[in-house]
Length: 150
Image (cartoon, rainbow, N blue to C red; front, side, top):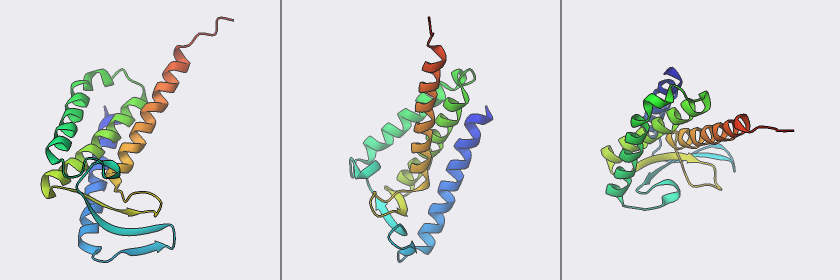
């Protein structure tokens, strides 16, 4: 099951390490690529895009429910395609990274600012990439199960 645990643990560890660096070094924003990329420390009390601000209990319950659902279906993952295994691993690792923040600080630490998008972190990237892999897996599963009949 390394196709699940490798992305889960690597995304969790990378997320927490980058947040530790951001918390210690980003007292002021750091412009990396003008008009494209700034590192800016933001405390996000909500979910993605600032949805459900200050709903800590609700967001904790959603995270715990998602985590429990993934772990409950863990045995079924053995028969799943690599898309599903890697995808759920990234989603699980990203969810844990943001859950740790909520439990530690009461908010999520965000620091990647690309200007046109809300500020985010590497846990968010892992969740989005994992969801994309799962969707790709769904498409590939459908393509594989369809019959031509002609």
